[in-house]
Length: 308
Image (cartoon, rainbow, N blue to C red; front, side, top):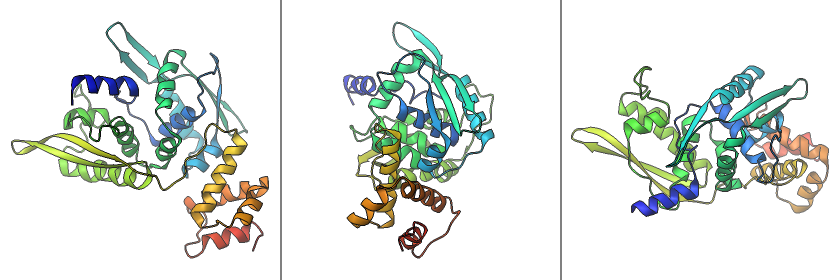
């Protein structure tokens, strides 16, 4: 790839955040992606973004406890990003504050103003498909590799990373050598990180990826990814719609996934707030295995809704 092409891609993606070295739990990543979905360019300084825990759990199919959220927002407040160009070096955190509204299931987040332009640029390069895809990935390494691969989707292949540098980006290796390196055997790195990430990304996102390990002598030294775009199996969530419209759209997707597509029946369900809520709750419980309906989940849902 020519240097000019590489620079153009880097500027367009503006992924100082994506390529930074950081370690995030799956809970932290879900909070960040949800926050990203709420962000709007016209928002004023000091805007508070409300993360509704039930909405987040419904979107992701994962349930987080209160302590996990406290740890996640605490880490996000203290984590530092270093963004550097020819004229300056910026040290900045993501969150200025996080306030929990007890008994309401709501977390109010305030972002650091100096990081706002980078988040806006990041959101501009995240379609609704990609936000939904990011929610669908359960492996934190899959989430991270998905972000990295997305930078190169228009090119078709990533740059070549040394395995050492790539493991630093995934926080599997401490560049200072203080902490122990994880998955020192390449076979373990493949099995528990790369192969899991590739499987999830190919199943749940708008990308199809493969990787190639490159040898120097007898040892693997580098890695690169090959990326193709595909149509995701899931419909995109319409994050720009009002919250109530978003719940209806989410329920529509659940109905389609279950094979409930009769127009009159779908319109009837989506026309009642109570039924919309029950559809989303049913889908969440089904995904988290709180209810089991392997043979006929659609029939069970219609029974729950009182329509059968």
